[in-house]
Length: 191
Ligand code: FES
Ligand code: FES
Image (cartoon, rainbow, N blue to C red; front, top):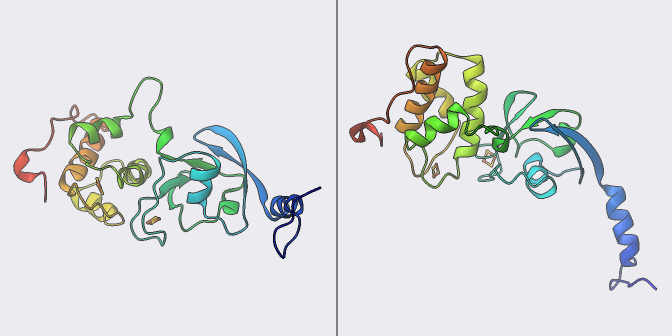
């Protein structure tokens, strides 16, 4: 006999109801086909973390301000806390877990490492995903453009100069202007 919650439906009935309330969605996560169940109003950020285990996507403000939850949806940097999971059905979602390859870190991640462009790293996944999108659309940005792009992200501990330097370095390296340079000097690393 199924257990009954006080004043409610039997637990087996609740579990059936819960399954019925949920939608099964299918998406491509970092190049792999994935499916999962989500509630109608579940945020994409929660779905990625709790249903698909993509915990590299961080959640800070949950209202579109900090940028920590940024992922790419069909290639476009998007706040996953401002999207419902059901809106990602059938789409390609890329998270920070997809940046590195079997060969190692991406050039962007490598530049962040060498420029000390992170400390606690809480903001870093979102910043990397924004930068990955931005550098495809604007391959040779100015420093002012990079700073404007980064204005959509809050970093509470690194300071933005090393991040800007890393992004400019990757842009220059990809353009073949020069090899990726040494880290920025200490005098300019915390502006
Ligand atoms: S958690 Fe999405 S913008 Fe802050
Ligand atoms: S590295 Fe800590 S918040 Fe950005």
